[in-house]
Amino acid sequence: MEEYPLVSWDEFRRTFRWKQGEHLAAVAPTGAGKTMLFSELMPYRGYNIMFGTKRADKSYDKILRQGFRRVESIHDIKPWDRNVLLWPRQRDSIPETVLAQQKAFREALDVVVKQKSWTVWVDEAKYLAEFLKLRTELIYCLEQLRSINATIICGAQRPAWLPASVLSNSTHAFLWKTTNADDAKKLADIGGIDAKAVAEALKQLGPHEFLYIRTRGTEAKIVRSQVGKK
Image (cartoon, rainbow, N blue to C red):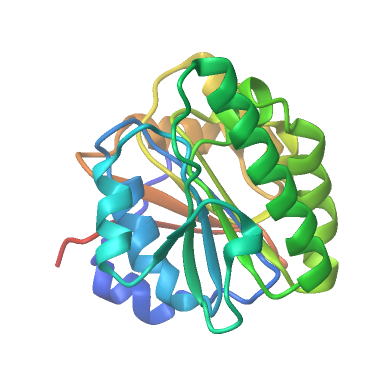
């Protein structure tokens, strides 16, 4: 197995370059550090929309404390808003809640395509694509937003749960530990890497450690780090 020396988060952050229009994927099991990564990376972008899909979540409370404003609809955003949490309230029934989320997120993606400058954070891409049946909209944005200088970030708990377009269209990928064979196969969707070598490296990661892969360029860049640790 190829060894990737561990670098500190501060060192990683000093060398990390992320341009508007470059998509990002983050794949981590619950509690591994994906939410912390998101909170660290959001200041890199000027205009952020995070999609809130859960009934309650401490990570939503955290970003609200960081200055995000909660809105029910993309049409509630004011001209001066730079950071918003699009978090439709829970309805009286599950079907009503699903319909409200579908409408809010579909309208938001339509606006992002027109306005171009937003960065969209989708914490649970599988839920958005499959449960809310917004796969077409999500894939369209992954394929088209780069050309208009907009960015989408897709998170998931396992690589195998992501639509193929997420990994193939992401310039930056953050991957936490996994030993699942289906996840290893899915890594082949990341261009420019030895998927088998990366899968073996992922098995060896410690708590909160991740592999960062930059896929664009003459050769993939792979770094092992640990978010939030000095």
